[in-house]
Image 1 (cartoon, rainbow, N blue to C red):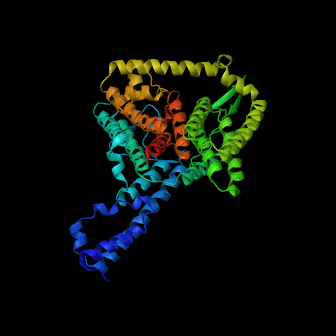
Image 2: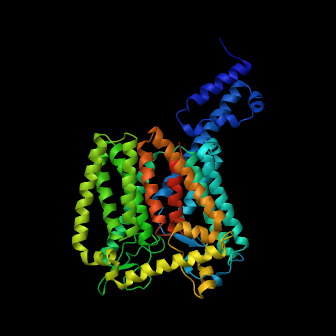
Length: 489
């Protein structure tokens, strides 16, 4: 029996959409199509129109996912382009590195968000209920406060540029929270990007100078004799830390810590034929993390690893394969750590026992001084803050000379955006804790949720000792990636 009229159109709608139900990004698409528009079409026209729309939507979502994977691959790269903004006064900027630029990772992240929006922003309903609604509203409120701070900041241009950077990573976080992204592909792309840093960073430490890739790939021209280069000391001897293609060893270290935690999922979930290669890649990335000499990244890896292990246990995800993977990585990591301590013992002493090295003592005292300045700025501007990205200029007005940003993200947010900005930031963290607590109580913690939770714990610790997760687009995008990924269903 043949259907006609509305019945035929309904049958075609069910038949065409049913073949796409495996793609969660497509679900709910037809709810936004006006019923009158569908009712005005004949059955054959409706079928052809729906197939065309589904094909277009699938293609756009595929492009969005491709841009996302590319973003993850180059996430820590320093590659950027300076921007000559009309009306921006560069003479009042205290540091060159905060002049307006756009990073490669930002361009790719914006492309991913743009494609996702063009596809209709699938699963946007997730952001309209429960803790995810609070997450979205808190992020938007944080962005609004940063944008408004350009009205009273000492350098309004810097505040406006920082708000633009924030808009990119806020939209990226909301996209991650909305979508259904393939976790193994994300982790594999992240690990592949870290391998690019690894061969560059290992050569940098071996040669004790930059490899020569230059601005095209974002490699900084670092040499141990440069005063601005990050080094470790053993008496008068200076050893260049691994930069890779990043802007600083600490930035690279944070990405490596997160990548090492996520890579455990590849060892567990990928086919047996690939596992040996993943273990080798993990060992290379671990060796590079050691050579960054980043104390915050080392501590972050420990904190994140323990958190991930606790979540896996709570979710009953510890099985024979997981134990084998953890044991294999632990053996490889211990062997490399032993070799590292044996070879670089003189430099490691100065890095761990800071009182034995005057440079490390100076660095610790400088960070304590930054915390005191942040407290003074918060007391002087509790409601408005000094303006986004204006910490250096505000410290110059207070002391007579500019200081770098305080190495503590909550204090930096409070000093730049005031208590309203800090409240929005705390609300973002709070919404993530609510989701985590619900999963903990129900014991519904999947493998990748546990690993992403471990990565977030690592970043939370880094936020207490460094500022690049707020000030550098690479760090902010890393935070947005994991935060949105954690909030996704």
